Image (cartoon, rainbow, N blue to C red):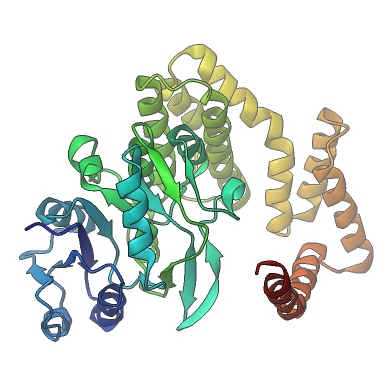
Length: 393
């Protein structure tokens, strides 16, 4: 009989984390699952670590030769027998013993929901180091979110940390699996594509650990394939925008226009300020936008958005790089174009302060905020604990 859930654990050279990941799954209160360890021809002792587990629900698969992470993901998905699939890398693990129970119950009761996820607790050097993946509009409560809303999030960036999500297998079989031409952003694409067809479940509690370490796949790709790494963001946004339009989803054009304009502006600014190798020239950016926009009006709108914010963003770029004279010139230009704009006026005041007293304000302010947050964290937690003790009975 097929299991309810399939955990797919892609693993390449992560044997030192694999045991913790598998044990966190075996500790779940919901037990109807299988665990597929997808060893992508690892040179370490992944096979030996996997062999230590005698639980019949654990299945070890080794690829010969190495497939690469995208094809390894898709192979694991194809082998999975469960109704629901949880793809979690060997360096991540589950934080809550009943997260699977909660996820399965929500999906069973809500057939219109394609996947469910939660924020992740960052694990750094074995210690909890903050929460990521909180949806801004839903951070305090469990809920079901409309797919359209998730697509809006996806216009600005990947809305979900992948190891936190449990997905209906039919999302992969009927809609899409991971794209080989998007090795960095394929998950971002999939969350949006699934949300075009389904609503999405959200739990506010961070019930999964996302591990940060020096051999993270994201950091490795950035170091070894920088050109591909830095092109993926624009490719993902343009692709999701195109699929959203094909699906007939209305009212998201402005979100995609702003996101695309911001992405190009970042590359243009880094090229101008730093001489960045992976940025854009204006001519190249204009040509790309015209080629990808649905018509000339849309291309002109995206270019207009870039131009509106250009002096202020360029000034901030110069400011961050320590080029104060050029920063001052561009902050003044930004105020000439938008006299009521607050940000350039604040930055210009900080620049003048720094020129007078020789103190960099932004690092100082950040340091003060960090110190204040660290100092207040304990009394805030104690106050909340007391509040719940007396008023949540």
